[in-house]
Structure formats: C-alpha cells, structure tokens
Image (cartoon, rainbow, N blue to C red; front, side, top):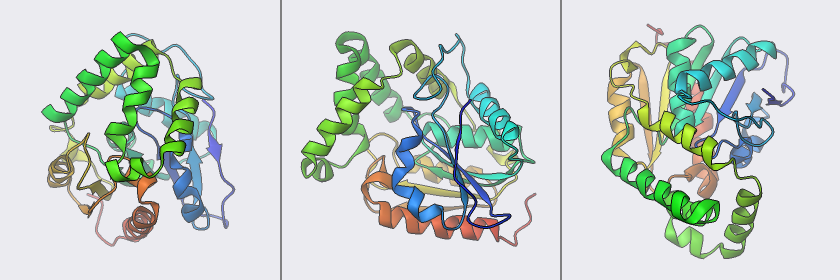
Length: 266
C-alpha cells in the first residue's frame, strides 16, 4: 500500500499518521499539513480500494483488516512507532490499531468517532445507501456535503462545493468498495474493548455534527481510560476542514499533551 510520508522536520521527530473517514482519501487532511509538518513527520494515505491504492475489496472486509494493512505498510516503510489522528471511520481504525498493535501506538486522536454506531448515524447511512442504490454515485456525492458541513458554510462556498463534487465523482471508489467499507463501519463495536486501550487518547468533536452526534464522543471518552475530550462549538462533521484554525490548535495542543503526558499508559 502506498503511503505519502513527509520529510522529518528534525532527526527523531515523532510520526503522526492521518486516517480519513469513509471517503478514504489522504487529501482530506490538507488543511492540517502546514500546521503539523514543522513539528512532526506526517503520513497520509489513500485507503485500500481508493485513490492511489486501487483494489477490489473482498467480501467481509473488516476494520481489523484496515488496521493490519496500515500497520504492515508503516512497518515496511520503517516506521515502528507513531501517533494516529483518525476522523470518523479513521478514528475506528485508530481504535483498532490501539487494540491490535499497542506497542506501535504512542497516542491516538479520535475526531467525531464513536464506540458503536448510534441509531441516528445508522439512519443517515441507510438513507445514503438508498441514494447510492437508486441514484448512483452522483446522488451519493451530491448529498454528501449535507452530512459533512454546516449549512451557512456551504451556502457561502457554492463554487468550491461544485468543484469538490466533480472531483469526488471523477475519483469515486466504486459502489462495491464503498458498500464493503460501509459494512465494516456499521459492524464496528468497541463498547466491550475500549477499556483495554493503553495509549493516551484525545477526543475531538463538533457540537453541530449532523452525522455523528457529539454525545458519541462523550460515550467514547467515558469508556477509554486516560482519555480527554474537547468540543468545538461549530464545524460540522468535517470540522477540520470548515474550522481549520480552531481544529489545528486543538490538535497541536492535544498531540503535545499526549506525547508528553506523565500519566502512565496502563
């Protein structure tokens, strides 16, 4: 699997791995790169079956496979220890990595993630699946901003959204791959395992997320020992894109705190 690895800003700089959500594209994190790269060696990647890592995903494709594929690619790149920042599905991959590869993870930041899928989020995905079945990729792509962004942010950026939609259609991961990844997302349940996570965890959510209610992050924080949470007042599901200054400040402070934490990782 191809990774995009930035040069380390100094010898021995800590590594931060960025994991996108269901869209799977490493470019999702573009608003964070300039903030992170002066302090960290940053790894981005297109998830298997998307972008620069095209593949037909197998039946029963799982979160554990997503985590193992990434861990293997990082090991092959000579990266043995790293922090993870994951958004939504990417946060779930981060949680899986923390459980399956505890010696590799130094810290985890979960952005708009969850322990187990809420009834509201499940309903949103059911509606989006119907759009995909009856309206094809175009309907999926056109509806996506409604779940990602606040209404006023969208209204002020019509040309940008049109360009994003055209790009998303041109690079659509394919219906079968999307449904396999969505199935893995819906099956994920960390409610019985979260207490085993040893690395320090920062949880960031947005109060106005229309896809994943912020209470999901509260539940996640309550379930994970040595975790801390920060709530953004606004920003929607893709709060790192819509409010990058606020988000980047929380992210940089959170990573610094986690990596220099004096709390023992039990």
